[in-house]
Figure (cartoon, rainbow, N blue to C red):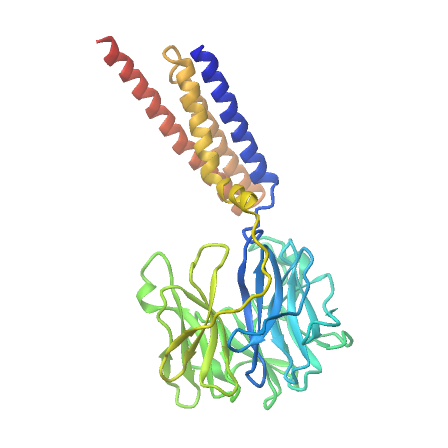
Length: 430
């Protein structure tokens, strides 16, 4: 009777093990599938009265606008199986642009009226867009793009990088402005007085001159740290803010990213935040001496959870803005619980329990046989990781190698369990 119960338990664990693996391999593992909260990207209207942001509502990310205090929230985009993010207001306040990301993480460029009407796709399906900005007359959009098929490749396999493009707001007149294959092309800023587009490329800040069509090192690059992110220029062009690694975290296992301000006239730099997390998407107010930004407070976990904050440039006083979101959908609790509970730890635990039950079933005759079987599986997996890394994909090989390490750890637990049974039996006999 005990053997039957043991076999039944083994069958249940085996079924859960196979089901978990199948769910991990075939299921949608998007961490944002049921998420509700702020998404990436912020914008402030020219009169400072409105902000634009992306917001996840039970896994659907749309663009919203609100008053600068978080009230009067209005939805201005309607995503369908895609994520909308990184909004920007046009200088004349009539339009808004944003990026639409599909399941393959390919981003397309869209514009719409500021109330969300008349949405229009401006980029082509063959393009992957990383950043975009309006010209000062609101008639042209400059954006960074790379071939979509290249963006799907693993790091080190891509043959092309990002370049600068322009397109009219009605979708006509698209032009490629550079042919340099930049590694990154972020933090685009249109400078009307110098007639140039400033952008961040890896560890340098460049400027594309719209008149002579050449790329130069930007003036603001002088004296800047190499590892800066989220570079933003003030409306008066006399200051910049950016994020970089906080000094106290440089020698730790987890870098923390805080917000810094540099006065371009006197060269002085000051630190604005000390949040022990990560600051993203900083934006200057146009008429207020403050910065609007997102605090990635659960850094580096996913889904990324943000708080909307402001910091005063002189007093460094922080203030959190509460967004008064209307009509949010409730998350699917059951599916969300399943999605979070089925992971690599679950599979590893079920694998270990299954081999422990098999050890008990074979006890005392072949008590170490399950350990040897598991050890053989781990050795085969290690060999497979070497083959995959050498012939297919180094990152894939690392993934298989991590799986082999997990199987090896489980094998050690199974072996120790068998050894304990063996000693227990000897103790009972005495």
